[in-house]
Length: 488
Image 1 (cartoon, rainbow, N blue to C red):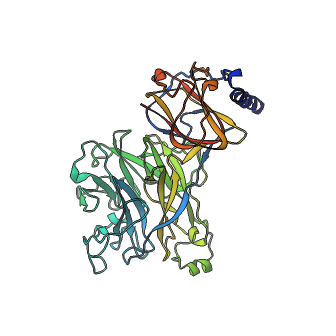
Image 2: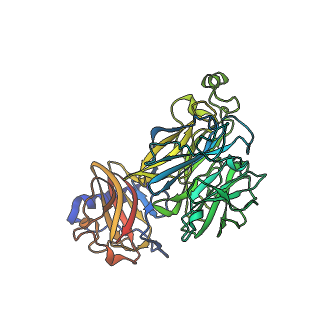
Image 3: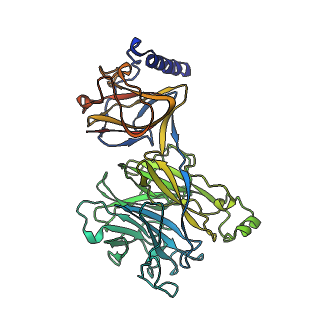
């Protein structure tokens, strides 16, 4: 089988290098009984949803780059036990929410408050003096919710994108513990919050973590992902609602045939460039996996109850329903250099990945939990850069499953080395090249682009194939392919 695959890669690459001397790729695909309709949606390569065959190429996970601290939890009402952060991109403003807690206490303590920071770019943050609540003897603070125990333990807001949502409820949030259930809040501006009702809207969960919710454009309902226990590990369930008040019976999430691991927070949210795909940058927790000695913890001034475990962040995805895809079991964001990064409940990601530049997106991670140096850091990736199809210098190919599309141009997010390249052939469902779109007629793509049109000798127009089941066959050398989409 390995020999056969090698011959296939070699023959395809020879065809590419030979140019007009060779015209066809091997017809090695069985007819697909049903094609996937991707319309004009962006399809990032975060799973194998569109991938039929990889020969000499691999689907690889990319590590975000640490851009350093953006927010110190250094005010008297914030402190070492700040956590459960959320970032919301609201037009040109970035809104940050997080629990303020200066000292360890029971879940739902009256000392917990919800703090707020904002930024024009997601990089430079400020803490506005809001004057809404008296905390620590002063109303000069950045607190947006106080005296609301136990809601402040894990208050988790979102920007409601449901069509025709009323202006006074543009923002919504859930918070609470097992004892209280989840309490629903709404806000016109993300600053002033009010309860939707006194009674909890949902009560069937552990809730001792960040309970995240959003309106799903894909499923046309509100969705909430929350902490449960299953198989002896911290796990995740979900519930749905049409009105944010009445919720369905919870359903446990599945993880395919993968090892069960403790997932402390799930941070599931629609990817802003492809909302039909939910991205979960989850905190993976390893109870009892102790790295620091008591002496080392004392030197770092770690709370003595919070150094005997460690954690990192993993990437999961979902396309709706109660299934997560765990294509990648490896760590997405590893703990950094220094023992301060290896304490309990550190490295927990904030909710939401947001765009912070023309070709950049950011994810935020809390560091140094239970330490005087507790803070939030920013990590960046290229747009769609969670993962990619990677080809080495020797070259390789990737062929998609059969699908239909709507549009006129095939836009690719890719990067090559100077000698690297990408070429695209459009095939029928049997794997035969479609005239005018064969490999020998494809133009070589070289460079680094987020949206670049694939082209052939006749140009970039693929509208004649719109609605027809096709496959894409990529021949790549020293290159990464991050996503594809069809546009008018």
